[in-house]
Image (cartoon, rainbow, N blue to C red):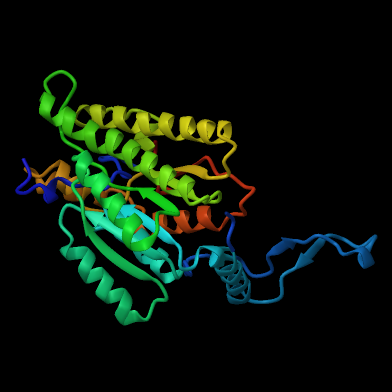
Length: 330
């Protein structure tokens, strides 16, 4: 259906045709905004007994925004120079996440079936003077040997993985009543098995180096929480429901292992990427209409969510973020 193997790679977050009525170590998202005169709750000092714990933030929204950005940078400092693996980094959400992490000073291994776009992004990041580094790596996630080889290379060349962001996903317009078995297998292999293999190998990488504060983030979809009335994505939804269950199961197993490695699921709704054009590759007008009906999320919005999750304190576990355009109905 797709012209090449790489063309079949799609971003896992969005879904189509949603009509709207509307060892602990210590990106600037640029999108945080706060109204002027915002109220910030602060812990009173011992000398302030009897005083209110509510203080007015001085003046302008830019001052408040600047403080929030500074807080995010400080929270992300513990990740500086550590290694994050981002799958499906050749475009869309994966590319936005890779860029955001490089901006925060991380070493990022970005993988995909073809790495031309990742190489271009790496050059852009370097030219922009970002403190981190983006390392392109070719990996066919439908092939377990490719995945194991990638983790082996990361281990030998860079030590190991501290953050694993399972972003790569695949959708095929194969319905439950008439879909092809090969299409179902393709989706299951990438969306479920590859994610699980990467998760297992990332955990083993952390465990063997006594990394107890790592993070595994699964870029899921709102399709992993409800089933839209769109027959061509019903099997895709099933794979995303699996991601929801796998993330919670992972959290429980990490707790059972007395590990402080955290597991998070980020579930976006309609994100303007190439998702619809690859799903409806024979009907570009239908694909374009998907993104014209409402103001969609952008890949950078999902990247901001990743930074938010990673910047949370080590004692805070964010299990799931569900995010969708304001105008998206379901």
